[in-house]
Length: 293
Image (tube, rainbow, N blue to C red):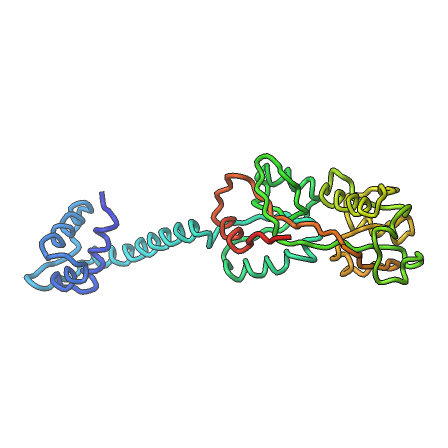
């Protein structure tokens, strides 16, 4: 069978039309080069070269084979390069699911840096509810997810990449709305609108612990899955809420945001399935080191 080495030898000889110079370029002596060309002609069943003691000329068959051989070699070299780039994570696909808050914190800069470093990777982004996101990552529907830290989950690797403080959202007519800062004591007996424990357990836990730091149990009026829903409920004067500070960026009508004394912080985590071997994911992990609280 014809091998790729024989084709390289032939193309080099066809470009030099001189066995000595071709052998030198190929780091061979002339006899093995001549044997390889003869073997190629035998396999093809056609004469590619007219030989003299020093020079060679292409036959018509050789001229035709040269054009095709160059195309085959170029395609082969490209295939080898593509395989190496794929192994390095420079091509391929990377899918990332993210909670809404990530769009206002870590996701835009991370996506910009990743795409600048790996422009040939097809990056797919999709906003997902946090509790669904865990299932999607475990089921390999996403390579990675960005969400509030879910705590230990079997089969899931977790890395904190950002810490965000909570702030207080109140209706603009609320007595606290004229203040710039509030404390845990100010929230005693205030009706709270909180995230449900199944959708964002770490965020829910942070709210409850902050209330307990003021010496009381939280007075929960309503639960919702999404933080923007929570703030919209605050806008209807149905209660107050401790929400991520990034919610200020959305400029909700009828809502005032106050900083919190000794504000709790929640971690945004990058999560991925244990054993995911996607090289594109490997590069994402390399540019997102863990951060301390």
